[in-house]
Image 1 (cartoon, rainbow, N blue to C red):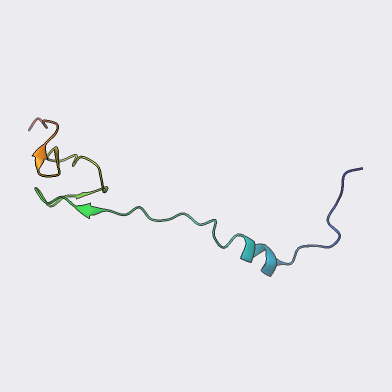
Image 2 (cartoon, one colour; image 1 turned 30 degrees about the vertical axis):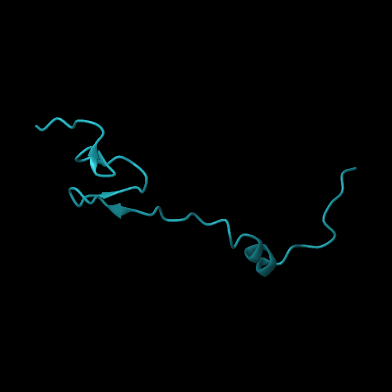
Length: 61
């Protein structure tokens, strides 16, 4: 037979074990060029700038 728990795990102990399993909200910063919110260390999806220079060209509609 496989080993089984000796006693039932109480809800308090179970919840304390799961205290760090929550998801973290993603951080966002404002683009210094256009002011749009973007992820840090990523190219801005609206203007295409990263660290003060244009990395990708965004076509305007």
